Image (cartoon, rainbow over all chains, first blue to last red; front, side, top):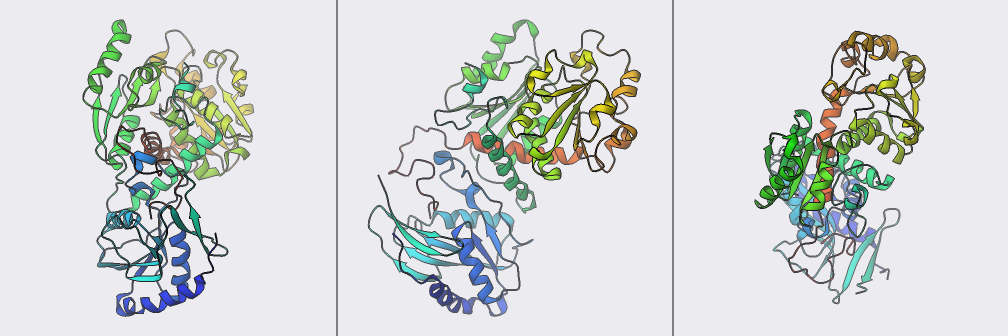
Amino acid sequence: MTTTVDINALIAQMAVALQPYLDERHPIMIGIHTGGAWIAQKLHQSLGLPDPLGTLDISFYRDDFTRVGLNPQVKASDLPESVDGRHIILVDDVLHTGRTIRAAMNEIFDYGRPESVVLAVLVERDGRELPIQADVVGQHCTLAPGQHIKLAGPEKLALNILEDNA
Amino acid sequence: MTSTDIQFDAQGQLKHFLTIEGLKRDHILQILDTAQSFITLAKKEIKKAPLLRGKTVVNLFFESSTRTRTTFEIAAKRLSADVINLNPQHSATSKGETLLDTVNNLEAMHTDLFVVRHPNSGAANLIAKHVPPHVRIINAGDGRHAHPTQAMLDMFTIRAHKGDVANLRVAIVGDILHSRVARSQIHALAALGAAQVRVIAPKTLLPTEVERLGVHPYTDMHEGLHDVDVVIMLRLQRERMNGAFVPSEQEFFNLYGLTADKLAYAKQDAIVMHPGPMNRGLEIDSSVADGPQSVILPQVTYGIAVRMAVMALIMGGKPVARKRRGNRSTRGSDETTPA
């Protein structure tokens, strides 16, 4: 089921909310593959950040590797040369269990020691399994058991609500 | 059961890596693509990924090796595994039993993955059939049979320097007869649909009916190298020769050694590869080995990423005794990753 959420409006709203994190901090923006990278690209553009956008594929850091194996479509992570001492804005599409963010932070710290990390997500839903929260949120939502929310794109971004078939 | 069947699980995923034979184009591309994403790992401050944390990898080398063993060791360590290197003395008289006994003992120490090199063809298969279901085997070279990770890193090298293998003419030169590397390369090139694969060697070093592998045999370097995009030189395996295969080393070099003159028959931008160790002045001239068309050292670097990819792919998603949660146990059921 496709929702009628205006994603561009959400992104514009996130860009405003991110203003306090810009100023003198010269942050590096990093989007998590795949949906987070789409959102990050739009935010990066609208904020006019001077540093190139970084992308992160957390497949090698997932905590369920022994259970489900490697994602068959692993993409290369592409981070700026050094994250040491830098402020980072981490962007994802949906914050759900918090496991992706944990994996992403583990990976970022293998590149260096950032000064700070803030999290910006398009959608924050219920179902956290770890003590992780977003600093900037486009839209909060609560879903029924068995429902998932997924970002489709990249040409036309849309949020779809999927039902577990099980 | 052949090694082609034994290396897949019920879902058709790789669980051991024993031979290229039987691999589909998609299997090979998955390994190459995964390896590509491991290449960036070397850019990190901490050159590690935690995929094999807490796993034990035993490099079991019954035959000497520097490059292969070292790159397997580095690959496993970059994946955060604990690695043990063993070079048991090979005893020809007690091979079968001794081999399985050795494996039994190491398995009792909770080894998760064996990387095996053995002078006998089929040794890795034998071990793969014998170990319990949670243990994985990678063949790092068995006799004249196969050396699949070498072939994969060669495919990676070709793709990195020349693009899609399907458009390329590839010549494999030298001791085809004794070469497990050549056999694995030929299978990989066929699976990737290479435009043409040639083998160039004196008749004594070509397997009989080599055409049945889908390759074009040549005994003359001038004809064989004409217009090829990739030249793969092989090492003359004197240690596996128990008869007179070549009249003299000097004559072999004169006829089949890759010199700048002979390389000129190939395309101008052809690349030169060699699995190592090189016999300079026997199968390859130093001016070519160290020349601008040589990608012999990049091959070694790519070997690490490719071996990481193979290890990661066969070690992931294993059936574990642990209780599974809910209905998210199958691959891809929750595409958004556990968000």
